[in-house]
Length: 305
Length: 316
Image 1 (spheres, each protein chain N blue to C red):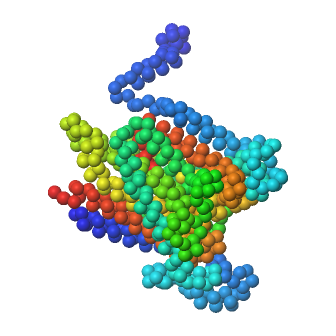
Image 2 (cartoon, rainbow over the protein chains, first blue to last red):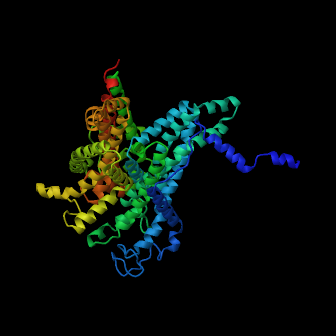
Image 3 (cartoon, one colour):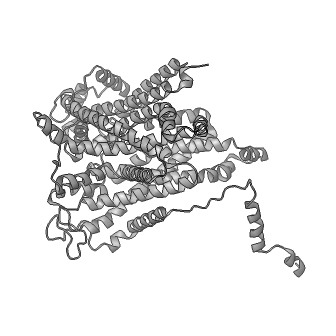
């Protein structure tokens, strides 16, 4: 290759500048740059904080979640018991750090599983259509027709409560809403011109799903992921609160509220701190989702319905 | 055309109820081991198991058991509880009344409150009041019901000593005592349900506000107050009735938590106790009552929105 040709070729920056010109055309696609309000930024910090705690919590906690180290139960903060002790005299602060792993871990696992099931079935129903779509959609309607807490109670009455069962129940219940969204998105995308063009080019069905359907469905599904995660956290901690979720002595934010409820009458805040932990996590996620969806058009109010 | 649509929706409602009963029955029947095993425990011999199975009808195939269970349930025979052998109908009888009393009072307070607050927020969008209502309601729907209940107990019962922290009923309270006992659970539920209802009312009105005839009214110079009360509200009644029915349905899950936290002797508390002792017949009966109510309320919501649509009411 001679030097002249190399010089004539556009440099990296020039290519970028060239692409930027197209962005300013009136029919250029809207830029997907997400700008958060200060409330949204604060929320991101809170969510990241809790997720980090979920991973490192047990290592930085001053005490083990099951160790009874305090002098008495329901004590106010003293020495290195930063948030006081719980109903058995365990350190509330340490248990919140340990509980983050349980509450956030279970919810995240359940939501991811729900997404895998929901998206696979939803896209399959949209692409395949026909009897497959019929059967899966009707089954899905039946799950959606029931309050999630009732489904949870029925399943726990039948199978008892353990962590794998909790994850599976939550995943199945919330996969139904993911399925509905993924199917609707898939159907929308499958009739677009670019999919027709891909079909006409002779692309296979897998190529179309991977290169056309999934990338276009990714953004709305990502926003929905946050909402779904909130629902799952609320669902799991409600079950734990009823004494049907994570079983003691393991620390989980929902069951910590239940255990320490009696302490309220002794003015102990042991039940309040884990409740605040749940609230800060779920409110923060919702605020982020609200910020993001306000920028991309749809308001959260419509989606929460 | 409209009658047809309503009838069709009611038909779908019936099918849903059937499917729900199937889910409840199957969910509680695919246990490893069966009810006979649970009753007799590990030490049971094969013969006693077989006798009890025949007695309970467990030797029959699944679909026979399902239909006889469904038949009994429809005719009001809910079976007997595993714990203590009391008839479930008598257990449910007193509890159901308590739950209905609470749900009724919650509806009575929360519906007018949230519809008017939602309307007010929609009338003044973007003001500090609207923004704080939006933030408060978003926060409320993002937190678990027990968070709100715990905070209320801390503030109203422990710090201020205004209200008792449990809602135990002995059955012969005077009116004032009853109200005081019910105040905390009702307040919690009103907050939880209202948050949803306010958001949905506000969104419903703002949705109507973006339609062309409202734009026309604005261009004519009609004041905003009058637009909302005369033009928007009438057309939003359908969606609002829909919102109300949906939120009464949300009460179902709120009731479960609130009855537990305040030890209120209602149906949900009975069901939770049933789940804890794995009293399956009791869980089945309670689940059917809750799910049935839920499905019927959703059905009412859908029928209301069909009825409220003038295009369907006066077909061309």
